[in-house]
Length: 124
Image (cartoon, rainbow, N blue to C red; front, side, top):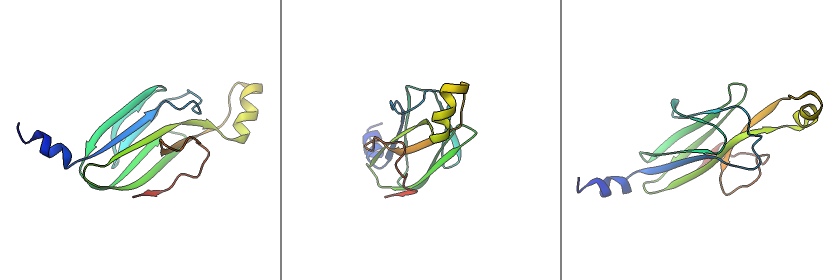
């Protein structure tokens, strides 16, 4: 048990938040790390876990649309991501008039507040 703190510093940390005010708050998102299901994210929820340093693929999907990020994490590094669903231009027009519309998934670094910004496919 005394080595537990030492082992923790050898790991990287991934946080996926679904708390953005840009999220349309509809439909759950399934989250995966390295193609392994890790959590079902409803609006206003978060997931966090430690992973070994190195290359990882983080994926979120609403089963209509999917976003993936390929990352290379160092020991002790924390990667904080924001995920959610958002309306594209067509969905923004259809939703008020029809009550539904196409929406997409965003997955981005939490420091970037725009779900419409181009998500980097690889983060280092």
